[in-house]
Image (cartoon, rainbow over all chains, first blue to last red; front, side):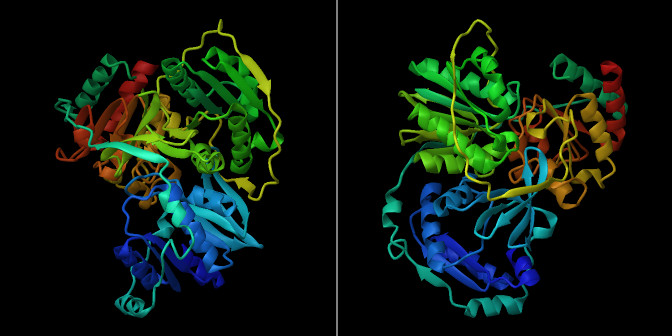
Length: 215
Length: 322
């Protein structure tokens, strides 16, 4: 989405991540896909909580200088917290527009489509906004060409530490405690519906659902 | 435990309000606490009904900016109510507005936040929430250490409170001044038709996937959903193929639903989809592949081409509903 915006209105795109050394693979991929620069806040500790991540990223973004738009994924694939974009906006004191499948530069800001409880809303946001992206067909990441990957490997990735950003105290934050992590037991309980034809299976299924009082 | 329930969305208590009040009452009673409902926007008119549902006190916050689901105004209203009550547990509905304002509210209150909670319990006098992680493949049991705790609760996971009109409580009106809106709504592009059931609130969800082979069968799914008083969902594959709009997507990157009845038609059951629907009370899967992973979470499986089953199913349901 950032790269589409760059192509449509000439933005400069910086990819930013917070995480261990190996997280730089993500930045390499972003550079190969068209990001201009990359910033890596290096931290080897595992499982930072969202409040910590948001404070560290806010400090990193302030270091980058004047920004118009911060794009975030809607949630991580691990903890599925979906908190960092909103917390980051709060840290920066910026407005936050979540669940955005589509956006474009418009007026002195951005025109965004967002999912809301009343359907899809079209909103106008000023420059200086945090947006969380939800998937839509036209935001599929493009596959970088081999040449782009090779060029990306030669681009420098700027590295900083939370200490250099002056937010080492944020690393001490531990507001949420994980007491236990477990895999819920899934016992297959599927009752297969018998029947010689589709119609008979449908009729037998309806009988079962009536017995269970769900229809 | 002081429990604060955020309520919005209309002049009569919503399904979310009934569920959150049910949970709030249970948690407060277990710890000798007090339940406060913060009724914002149109919900301010439902104060009496909220008391009947278990609130000891209702704080009403009415303001013209709350006529639309404006996240900034609702965040300030919620913060005003929470600060008025003091430290406590704040329960937030797991709808779009809840996801939008919960991080900001937690930030303003200096509170730890747990999102997408499925279970809420008291252990050693403090709240313990269970939430799904790793795309629904695992669960985490979480506690929050800060004096205030904000917990976003997934819809249809809590037992709703039953109204008791003899209950009494206090109603207090709170003033607050929202900042001028920075994000302006230009238009609602596809506002749900009046009377349409929202996917997250639906008691019945009929979803279609890649196995449907095209967009046309979604009309049949819609007919079945209509007959059952439900809503239509779709898998990521069907949305990616352009057969269904993104707001209908059920799954890890779409909506999470827990209806009484979930009917999956032509959905293989990728873990990304299962993450959004495995909490459904009864799951029916119709798929021609008997090895499809959807059958591992289904209660009832129909191994068949959906084209042979769906028309008969619609007829059968029409007959009993007619």
